[in-house]
Amino acid sequence: MKFDTLQQGISFYDNYARLSDFDTRLCSTKKKKSDGKIFLKYCVCNKEGLRETPRLHTEC
Image (cartoon, rainbow, N blue to C red; front, top):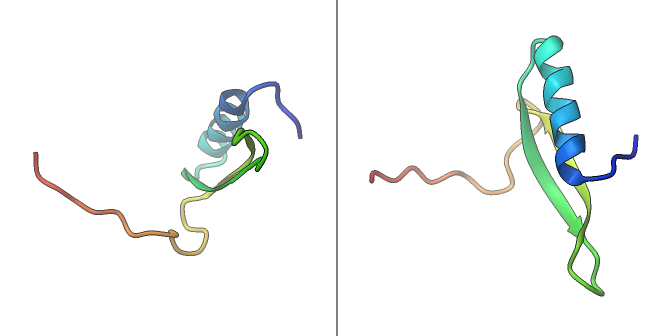
């Protein structure tokens, strides 16, 4: 499925996930080498594999 903006695609998948009773997270991103613009962003189920980098928890 193709969307006009990245945010439209993310919103679509988040709404679908909410209706289907699962959570999502953003995964890897692919950028064009020529101009650095994002052309592919993976949105996955939050239980899909492992995160690429662990989150650090810091206290404010």
